[in-house]
Amino acid sequence: RLNSVKKLVYTSSIGAYSSREIFKEEDSSFSEPPMDMFPGWAKRMAEMQILAYKKQYGLDNFAIVRPCNVYGPGDNFDPENAMVVPSLMSRIANGENPLKVWGDGSAVRDFAYSEDVAIGVIQALISGTNGEFVNLGSGQGYKVQELVETLSEIVNFEYDFDTSKPNGFPKRVMDITKARKLIGYNPKTSLKEGLRKTWDWFLSNRNATIDLKQFVLRA
Image 1 (tube, rainbow, N blue to C red):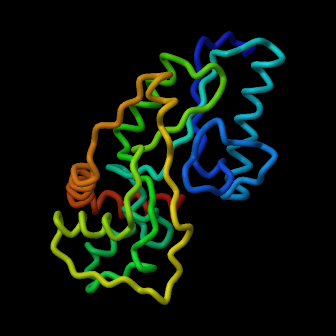
Image 2 (tube, rainbow, N blue to C red):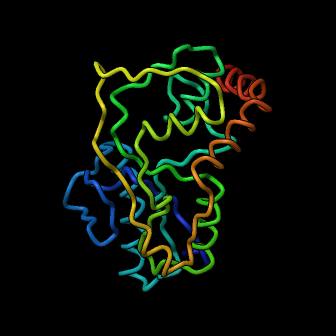
């Protein structure tokens, strides 16, 4: 603001939402706690700062996006702390056979390919969001079972669902209607195409990701 920056986009997270099955911007409320408590509040604080600037200074040139479960090339593939897609891929590559998947596979999630989300961030920067936030997801819900089965069409591996482990929240899917209308967001990458691109990148850069991990640990 002090340097008259013309446009800024802040990347928040689906974790800033309170827990629900379908995430719509108009249903969000700061009066309800975020489902990801500490990181969710951290994301919300920056959102609230932007809203405060809009009210106090009349600024509407700061955009906010809330992505969902983003996956793709360049992801964190450390199975100890990676998200579901890169974690599964890393464990498959490490020879886990059969692959043990937590729950019965019925949980539904929104998996968005990184390139689609990156384009959405740029669209938000160019078009603006009037100082409010928009969802960046795939707009589709996929069962974990569907995710694993689709991945098995790309990579040959055996898998078992461990029903002694929790499924997690039954359903979490983003409504991207507002992003489509406001910034022209239109994710085009299918789940299978995104998984294939991610797997191919991982195989080509697996040693590089391991080296990066060692670099970070040394640093």
